[in-house]
Image: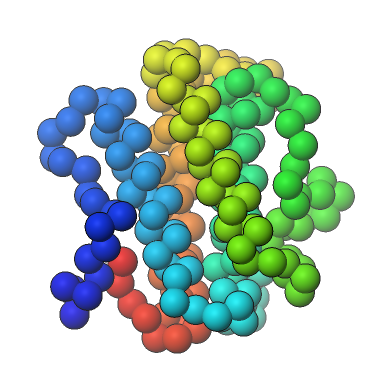
Length: 172
């Protein structure tokens, strides 16, 4: 039932809102959506890769999104090109996604939550027109917010399919 999908942590932004508040609200909406997709599963369910041709799992998506948060808000916005990767290895494609055999959900979830908070703190320092650097080019905080919303929305679509294949849960 649709009523069962209501969670006080996730609220859709109002239809009319100032630009920054709108961007921040949609990004939070999508962060919480990903978290909700992961809740209620055991470790095996979160690590499951039910699409044989894909490396995606819910646990891997949390790790990937932590890396993405760090990349855009620390490396690009704050211009910290040396900020270390959490799991990603440049020599191994999709290394934040797999392998997950020894991955610990609680510590990986905490790392993602810490990156989300660090992103909020970083963004709060600047107006939307502030530019950081990405691949040698200026990138505005406005662009970063829009990209992050798109990134989470796309991966939440993946999470929808993964969750449905893992245990039949649909919604959110």
